[in-house]
Image (cartoon, rainbow, N blue to C red; front, side, top):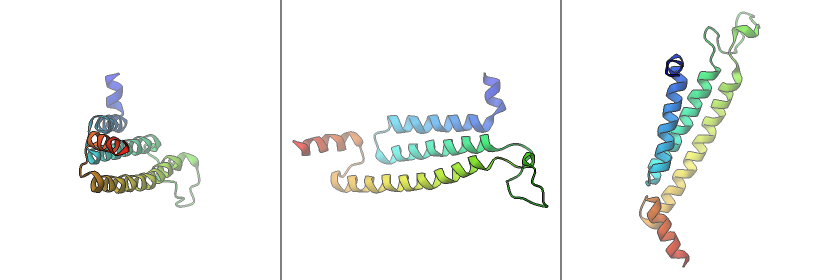
Length: 124
């Protein structure tokens, strides 16, 4: 199994990056650190999709010199998914940061546990 990981360094890096981001998302109490972990997970997924979509010896699917053979080009769908995912993740990240700013202005902390306890006190 370990040798298979060395054969696919891009996929291995993506899995490690995703694990670090997920650990950060789950274990950190600071909202900014959680957002950074979420961004790391996004990047890991994009790296994995790009690595899976690339085929050695082939080029981008742009017809040059009249070559239209499918065997000469990579599959454009993973690249399109990565591009779409980047646009969506930038939007989601900006929304998360905007909400974090609002929470900080209201509760004067970025600690999610403190924010939760203060919000519960406001309910009662």
